[in-house]
Length: 279
Ligand code: BTN
Image (cartoon, rainbow, N blue to C red; front, top):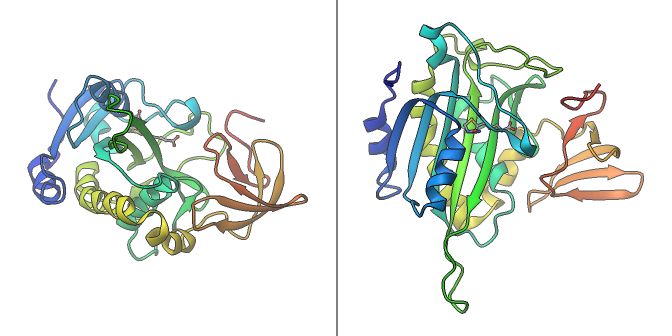
């Protein structure tokens, strides 16, 4: 099946290949999930750097085992209503902590360089505008085949999946309706947005590999959607959010003292905002 849109594959590959030799771009009309596909390839030994964009996902996945549904519009517009893609590459940072936050910073800065559109980061890696979700990030890694026990740790294959609402979408069971990019960039298209953010994203991932979360900490703080707010955690505790620590953990001051939250399995919300799927 051919893609509906032109995805600027050559332009993106030309911008990224100098940073990532062997890099390629693939655009497909439909797939189950771009993350699932790159993880499947990695498990089969295919660990080349690649960006895979799909106009439609039939089984898009979100964090914490949730489904990710893209915007539904008429067939002719469907390709432009959402941007769903995954970037796959081998990576060997000293410490993986904070990678998803660094990715969020990179995407937020590409979508809203001046900050005028108020694209904020909701720990660990949602992009929000006025407390409404604009984009989500799902990071997964595949282990390479084990080498000799005394060999240094080989790179893992990293898959960064990103879904961005370009046009309006249904609330899909979310209590808070989502945000979308055309609210402040009425002419934006998914292929243009992908072309804008691909190379900065690769540069950010490489900066993280070299320097960990430190270069991103202040930039995250500048867009932190939770800092200074009362928050509730999915484990039932509540407290005042004191922002993100230098290691990428969320700091919440509860009745028991300052909690550093690093678990991906914990959800956090501003107090009073319902968790997804809960009354
Ligand atoms: C979340 O908000 O929970 C993360 C959503 C991530 C969605 C993207 S869309 C492209 C890639 N493929 C997937 O199946 N998921 C990610």
